[in-house]
Amino acid sequence: MAIQSSIKANLYKDSVSLMRIAQVTVARSGVQRVTLLMGTRSNKEFLQQAGLMSPAFESAKPGDIMIVVADDSPDKLEAAEREIHSLIAGQDSKDGPTEAAAEAPPRSISGGVAVADHANLALISVPGPYAAAEALKALRQGLNVLLFSDNVPIEQERAIKRVAAHKGLLVMGPDCGTAIINGVPLGFANVVRPGVIGLVGASGTGLQEVMCQIHRHRQGISQAIGTGSHDVYSQVGGVTMLQGLELLAGDEATKVIAIVSKPPAPEVQKLVIERAGAIGKPVVICFLGGESATSIGNLHRASSLEETARRAVSLAGANEPGRDERIIGDLATRVCASLAPSQRYLRGLYSGGTFCLEAQTIWQAAGIRVRSNAPLDGADRLANGEDSHGHTAIDLGSDEFTVGRPHPMIDYGVRIERLLKEAEDPTVACIVLDVVLGYGSHLSPAEILAPAIRQARAAAKAKGRELPVICFVCGTDEDPQPFETQKAVLVDVGAELVSSSTDAALSAQAIATRMSAGEGAAVRRVMQGGERR
Image (tube, rainbow, N blue to C red):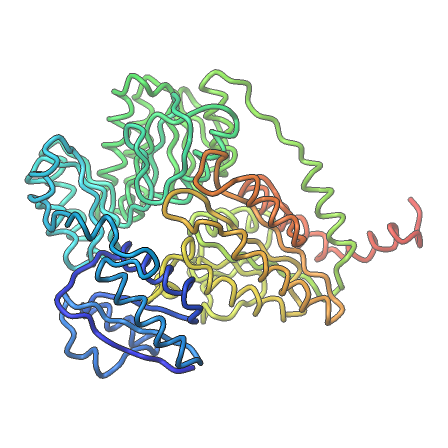
């Protein structure tokens, strides 16, 4: 595959804009890969690791855009280059000048405040080395901050959050991908009805899944406050999570609070639980991989994302949604009847780190050892994230897979490649995939994923195997993507569709457990009439 490199000098664009330009270019030109990064030292290191570094980039400055296009076709390379430069310049090659080009946006925090002096929040998405400085500028202007940027040193995160707390302001992030503040969705967020349940979490996709489940149970969200994944580390001390609890405690519209996070550092967990216990409102706490479900006073522990939503809905005054466990059992029975004895292992290919974490907690609780690039236990870390081993759960949104690429909720390329690779493995019993809808996500993810699912299942079939692909859609009927259409597309290519991330992990667990116990062959004999019970 040929790689073509170029530089657009002296023009800064944030990572979200660059991801969108890359996505549009791939869709329009058909080129295999587009990478757009600012010329920072860390981005050059990323390109080096990905095998995409060019000598031309050595002289690139942090204010320059490094452009990499890869394909086998010279014509596609040239078409992609033209598309990229046109989009960077603010010209849509199909529609002429864009509205954005006609009205130049502010180029600084102070410029933005001058245009919108009523604003009280700044969303910042710049390279990590510059993010803390921009956040401090916003705080000095009296603005709360959603810091979408990642790769911010943890000592800088601690410093800006201390400044914010002193000023009575909130910093969501760094690496905060999801929030809903006063009804306004920020980052990757879904369209949900307003209501009385307030969320605070160190998990973007976890917040999305919980809010979507709440919406489906006909309850709504008052606020959803993201903290960033490092907020619950001991070095930061849970500053934003504690502030978020305080804000929701004082919010008249919020009647029930839910917390979603991986287990915080012990001292942070103690602070969070103490503060939650002192709030005069019911609080659902989901520390994935932590304690199992219990209720003490106003605190209600949940062990999964779905259970978090169900408990919050019940505490909000609605009947707690029921669960029909037979659906999972019936799916596992039907699937196992079609599998060969060699098919024993699970493969979870997730765009959300929380989905990957939840699957690991469910599988390990059932005695299934899981390897991962983001493991619960360091001993289970994959030697190479590109290669699965045994039962495997992969976070495809981690840095090793997003170097020079858009997030997998936007660009499905990496996941499709991995899906097709896993389909060649005769030991794979099933593959689990999430499909995330909402603002910021791909405009029609199921239509992109469906041909790959069909191809993967056909490849396995050609070698005498069935390949179950379990999917769940994280979204609502109000999202920009047609929810029912997305589900129908997946069902049409033979995917096993379940209603939540929790059910997807439980269904896969049931399949692996039965195949490990040799039940697959027994089920086949019964269904084929060779044995009666």
